[in-house]
Image (cartoon, rainbow, N blue to C red; front, side, top):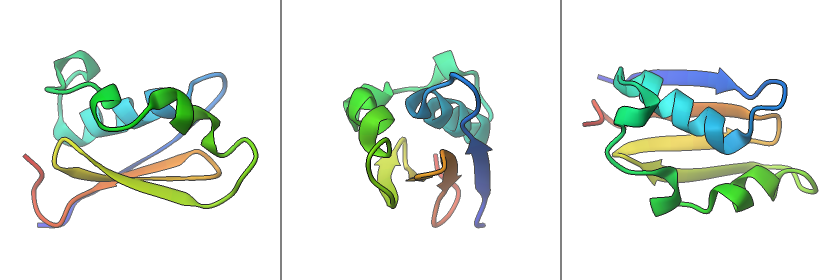
Length: 84
């Protein structure tokens, strides 16, 4: 089954915080209940600063999910199946 969750960064919220929120929502858990911190897979500061001077999309795996972040702060979480 293919599922997808999308969140858009808003206000002062960082891209990295939006990623954590989107993954937690996708998995149906509280942000603090995630098994691994974002820092274990990508540098949150680098992610937050990535699109300040460039455009594009960055994709990475986090907790068996595929996370895509674009220059507009849109975060999409998906998987090839049901991410565990």
